[in-house]
Amino acid sequence: MVKSRSAPDMLMLMCTLILLTIGVVMVYSASAVLAFHEFGDWYYYLKRQLLFAVLGVVAMLFTMNVDYGLWKKHARLILIMCFVMLAAVLIPGVGVVRGGARSWLGIGSFGIQPSEFMKMGMILFLSKLLTDRQNKIALFTEGLLPPLGLVGLAFGLIMLQPDLGTGVVLMGAALLIIYASGARLLHLSYLGMAGLVGFVGLIIAAPYRLQRITAFLDPWADPLGAGYQAIQSLYAIGPGGFVGLGLGMSRQKYSYLPEPQTDFIFSIIAEELGFIGGGCVLILFLLLLWRGMRTAITAPDMFGSLLATGIVGMIAVQVIINIGVVIGMFPVTGITLPLISAGGSSLTLMLTSIGILLNISRYAR
Image (cartoon, rainbow, N blue to C red; front, top):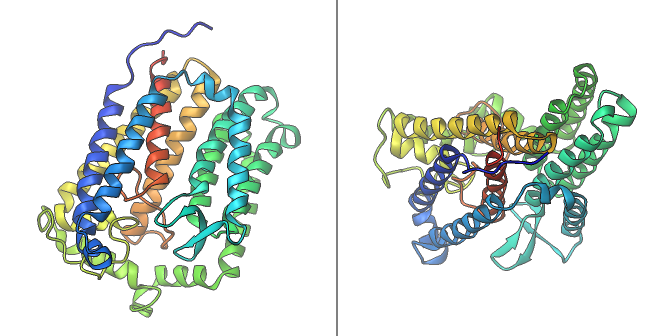
C-alpha cells in the first residue's frame, strides 16, 4: 500500500504543547520552595524540566517526521535492548535506588529509568507481533500466550525493582493492544480473573502495598503515616474551590504535600488554579486522547492502528491512575501525570511517543 503523507494532526500537537507549557509553569510553582530548601536554588527543578522538555520536543519533532514503519523493522532489537536495561537495573552496584525502588541507571542526579523505555518498547513489539500473527490471535495457545508471556516477563522484572505503578501502565497498554488486535474477549476475561488473583497476591506479599490499600479505604486511620499523602492531597484540592488561590499561592507545597512537583502536581494545580484550571487540564487530555484514537481508527494499516492504540492506552492509563490517586479514588501508586509532572525519562519518552502518534496521523485516511 502506498501511503499518502499530509500534515500532522494539529489539534493533537497543540494540546501536547499546551500541556507541556502548563507542566513547566506548574513544576516551577510546585517545586521552587522545595528546591531552595534542598539545593539553595529556586530554579533547580525548573531548569531540569526545561532541559528535558527541550530534549523531548526535539525527539518529538524527529519521530513526527520519521515514517512509523521504520519502528516495525527495529521493534525486536528495541525490545531486546529494553530487556537488557531492565535486567541491568537489578544488578547491585549498577542499578540506582531512588524512592525505595531500584529503578534507575545513571550517575548522580542524572539517570534513565529503563521501565519507561520498556513501556514504549513493548508497545512497538506487540504492534509488530500481532500484525504479523493476526490470523492466530483468536487462538489461545498460539496467538494469545506468546505476547502475554513477553508482557508477563517485563512485568515481573519491573516488579522486582519494585514499581507496581509502571507495571500496571505497561500491562494496561499491552492488554488494550491485544484486545484491539482481535483477541477473544472470553480468553481475556479468564486471564483477567487470574491476573486479579495475582494482583491481590502481590499486595498481600508486600506490607507497604497493603498499607496503601488500608490507607485508601480509611486514610484517617493513620493520618501521619500511610494515609498522610492522600489527606494532604485533599487538603490542597479543597481550598482551591472554583477559581483557586492563585498561581504560586499554594500552601501545601510548603513541605506538607510530598512530591508536589511529580506524583501530586495535579493537587497543586487544583489548589492554585481551582476547578477551572484542573478542568482545563482534563479537557486538554481528553482532546489529546480523542485525536489519538481517531488516528488509530483511521491509520492506513494494522501496525499503525495498533501502535497508535498502544500509545493512547499508555497515556490514558497514566492520566486515570494519577488523577484517581490525587482525588482519593485509587491507592497511592507513584504514577506521574504525563507531560505535566517533573521528570526526565518519563517526559522525554512521552514526547517521543506522541511524535510517533503524530507521524501516524500524517498518513491517516
